[in-house]
Image 1 (cartoon, rainbow, N blue to C red):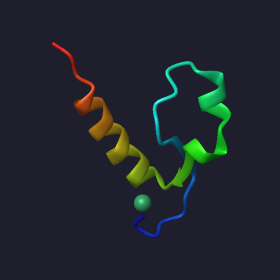
Image 2 (cartoon, rainbow, N blue to C red; image 1 turned 90 degrees about the vertical axis):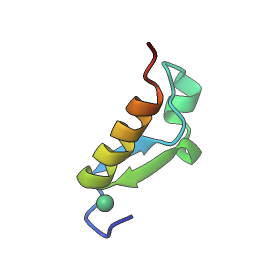
Image 3 (cartoon, rainbow, N blue to C red; image 1 turned 135 degrees about the vertical axis):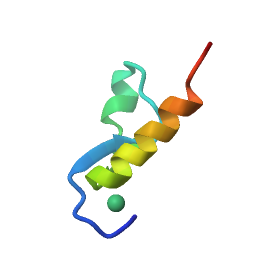
Image 4 (cartoon, protein in one colour; image 1 turned 90 degrees about the horizontal axis):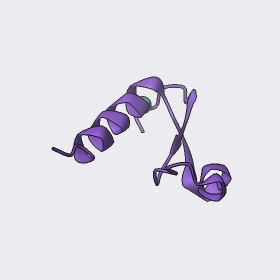
Length: 50
Ligand SMILES: [Zn+2]
């Protein structure tokens, strides 16, 4: 974490529509906008399929 105010809730594991995983607090982390965006971008790059 970079120390900014956390204003986003992020899923550690992508829930992919799984309600149990979506609401599981152990799968949630609070991130600031900056960290949230960088995590998202990394995941989206990792998930790219040709
Ligand atoms: Zn941050």
